Image 1 (tube, rainbow, N blue to C red):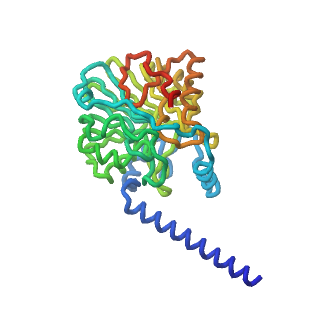
Image 2: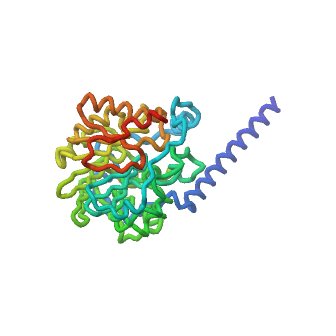
Image 3: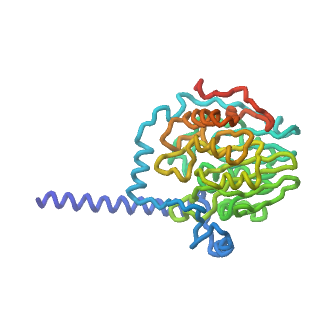
Length: 379
C-alpha cells in the first residue's frame, strides 16, 4: 500500500509539473511569438462600446451563441479531431492547382474576374482594382506549422511575391484560416488599404501595418474606395487567436458593389436571419461566395451545413453561388468532398446555380458555367 501511495504521489507531482511546463510554454509563445497577433486595449474597447455587438468587453452575436466550452469538452473535441479517422478526410493525392501567369493578372483590364486560392481566399479584379479577400497563403492554418495539418495542395496558383499591387484587403475575422501572419508580412508593403471588422486592426498593427492603412468597420457600415463601395455586414460566428482574447474582435461578411455589380462574401457564419436581412437591404446579388465546409454537429451555430448554405443563397437573392471554406484544409470531421457534393444537390433542388472552379482557375463574374465542374471527382 505504501509503495502504491508513493507511486501515486509521484504520478500526481509529475502531472502537475507537466501542466505547469505546458502553461509556461504557452505563455512564452503568446508573449513572444508574433503570429498570435495583438491585443485589444482598454482605449479601443471604449471606442467599441458604441457598437450594438459589444457587451461587457466582448463582441456578441445578435442571437447568442455559447462558445464557452469546458475543459473536458475541449479535450473531447481535440481528441476526436486528431485521433478519429475520417474516411476520405483528405484527397488521396496532392491537388494540382491551375497556375497563374503574373503578367496576365498584373495587366488585367477586362470584366470582373475571380481567382480562388482554396478555402476562403480570393483575388478579385474589378473596376481596375485588385482586391484580396481573407488572404491565407501559408501551408498550415495555425500559429505554428507543427500545430496543424498541411494544405491539400503543395503549391499556390501564384507565389505571393508575384501578386500585383493590392488596392484593398478584406478580412472577415481573426481566425488562423482567414487571417495569416506570414501572408500579411509578405503583402503589407504592397497594400493600399486593409478593411476589417472592429478590433482586427490590433493584429495588423502588431505585425507592422501602418494605422493609416487600416479601416475598422462595424456591421452595416460602408466605405468608398474610388468608385467601389464596401459594406461590412453581419455574420454568426466568433473570434480569438488565443485563450485570453476570445470574442475581443468582431466577425463579419462583406459586400463589394460597383455601379453595375453586386457581390457578397459570407466569411464564416452559422445560418440565421441575417442572410434575409442582407438580401432585403442590399440584394439581389450577382454572385455570392458562401461558406460551405468545416461544419460539425457539436457546433451548428457557427458554421453552415451545406443545405443551409444553399438556402442562405436563396435568402440573399443571389443569382448564383460558389461554395467556399473547403478544398484546402481539414478542419472538421467530414470528408473533404462532402461540402461541395451536398450543396450542389440542395442548390439543384432550389434551382440555384452553383459554380465550382478549380483552385487557381480564373473565372469571370458573368460566367454561368465553369468548364471543370466536378473536378474533385478525379482526385
